[in-house]
Length: 298
Image (cartoon, rainbow, N blue to C red):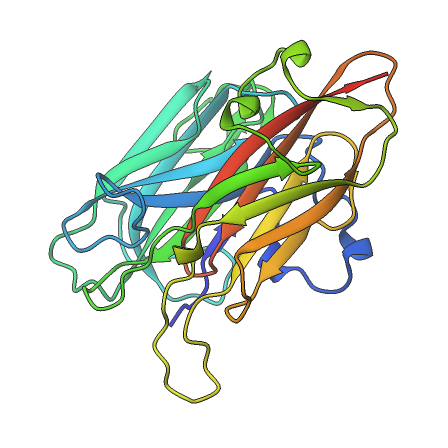
């Protein structure tokens, strides 16, 4: 039985990375269109990441590019998943829902569907499809040919809820930079003059992420060594500069639910928009993500 969410895209997710940070020195840099994670939400109750049979569910893929708000074409399909050793989920039968945009649009690829009412709630569901590089049109809903190159395969599978162990999404409460809160509206502004001004080439700026303390769901304890609640992982993605580590772990036993990395500003001769994309995961299908921006100035 699966116990860990699997997402296939342009990135192998941080929980699956091995070795030291230096081996993955570029994993945090957004230099092309990349799929970072997927968020599963029960419609009407977005905090819940595992639907009951018959409930409506929405799945969004976080796809980013070097430029803000990329326009994306995509094709997605949902199905009941079967267990597989592959990194790709496999379907037990034909998809029961589809969604697509053959022309690029300024929105995250998503699909909304009803979990089959006849299921027991112990099954896993999957969403599979393809996303074009930013700005490209999908030439055929059933293929991966895009007007600007080959599309990226995306796949996520996640557990349903049988009523006994609901899984909720972690929640990012606060993001601070240099000890000061970066408000949510800094994640949508492209006006460099309206954002915090950071000196080019300056170093060791703390980027701090705080999650809601309730983000770690309780877990069933079978043996005394089992953790009684989830661990969390926060991944840091950037468009410019350097971070001293690409992800931070929040163990089940940690006293708080926060983590910090240090960011070095790049050199520049003119104002430069620098973006931070932050992703939190619980390893069981729950996720949250947000963006913040600053302006690097000469």
